[in-house]
Length: 312
Image (tube, rainbow, N blue to C red; front, side):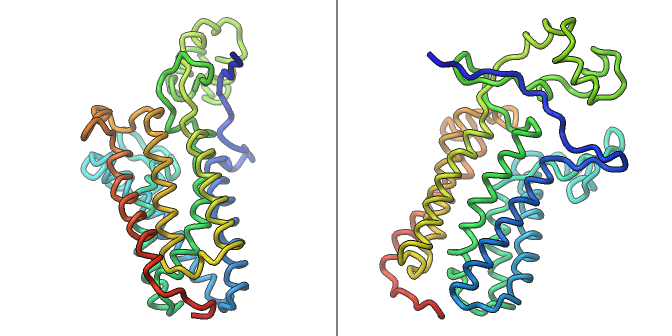
């Protein structure tokens, strides 16, 4: 059987000397830029003033980032609220020592909730259409953005999968070995060079060989989201689905969260002790089920509503 196994120990970003541009951050830039481009095309098609797009971008970015961060804290890392409260909203860690971390720890379920609320406010204050009108279109950009966010997780060696003996597995060096331990093992004070030595210097081969192979859960999820995006994109541009209020929004929730529900079976649980939290489901799976049911509701009810005109 063909086996796809390799060791993953990438650089985290582009070091420009005075600043390092992290690939994870670049993936967010790509996601938001592509989303802006797609929304611009939809606004032009449906003759919506392009001036309203700038406000949409601001509402969406703030809602997604704030909701994703708060969602992670509330759903996965509640202890930060009393152990290191400033790190909840700032890109720094203050406990046990000060460190710039960037905005790590983002939850898609929190982003979904905040985005819906943010778009409701945007529609009420600026767009003045049916809130389902904007939700049916923004979800297409969300599906494309989700792909790049998960690729960013892979580049960051985050959200790794469960240990596997199968033909598909990756050794995530930076997940298994912390920066401090890498420095200690190699006696190289620069963490980046220490990680590089671990995989390139033969004297550390035994250490690397002891790292277990894991499913690439991030890439598996990203692969599923590619199909979610393609389906929504084609339905909007090639069919009359956009005229059924709530259909694309509901289908997005149904498909995206189903992918999450399935892939969670291959991912390492993010909260220790919640591998079988409720009904043998982990945290991500439990949080996905309400979204799936809501999505199913909107898909079904979309066919009972009167189709809207392009300019409504």
